[in-house]
Length: 377
Image 1 (cartoon, rainbow, N blue to C red):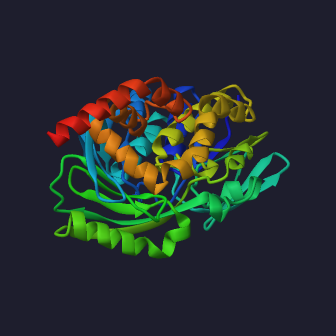
Image 2: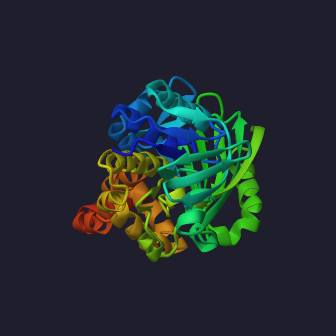
Image 3: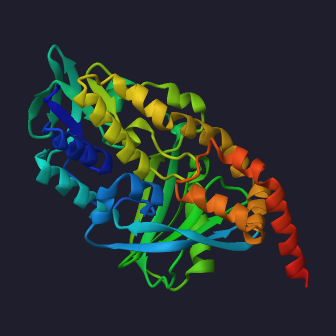
């Protein structure tokens, strides 16, 4: 087994990999000078992730469970759907919890930022601002601007990124999540209430990055004008537009990329926690088997096809007419609402989405017609 493991990045992907390796008797070194920290995102952990990774249920604080989502169409029509429980969690607390779990299990943390890596005869030379280290295997879990990715397969191209901005705020009196869509923007605005505050933001379409503030301010003015903003955020995240992006290898004989560094983020919803932990688990399996290249086989068998299908569906999903129709159908058809909530919950795959909608189309149409009749009477 490879025992000399350097994990660059201590977010959920890197921390969970350190934890998984420690459970198999391999004590990796995690390099990170910034985690735990609050990350620009909603912080929603899906039911799929909670069941697949039971460790998540042990987060000690700063989370809130919600079981409803309010969808708002580009024209302002609303539909509430429930039936699945989502954990909205502070990323500072979640990331800190996972990192501490890795350390408590035996992983080592070096609180230094890695500035560069360089391949050498026996593995890798790792440079930080303070020192130099050596490792046989390096794992890139260092986000969208990954040093490891830049050195191995090259940066994520701008067209396969997304932008988001927002605020952490108090004073949002809601016990449900909000997702608001737009006519001329391929993304959405959100409100995710947490234990002590809420995440309020807007993001995805990097082509509209300069207009994000306009969308965000308009959304806040309409849906939560009296909030107390405690801090602001902004970031780039992976969000592939071209399915060929996923053909780029994520592992080699002495390196692996996981999480945002691999670009493994839902390109429609922007959700990445599930893939960060899933990728870490699979990377641990490959490392335990002393075969880093195996990671590419494992993640492609696990979730490659779903990411590709999501990428292909993106333009269709964010068509304003389809968004308007979708919200109407959610409000009128319990069957369709259940399918959409399953998608948000991570339990409905993109690969199976069309087939399930088609198979249930007679029931969906029947329910929608009855809904129309009820509204008219």
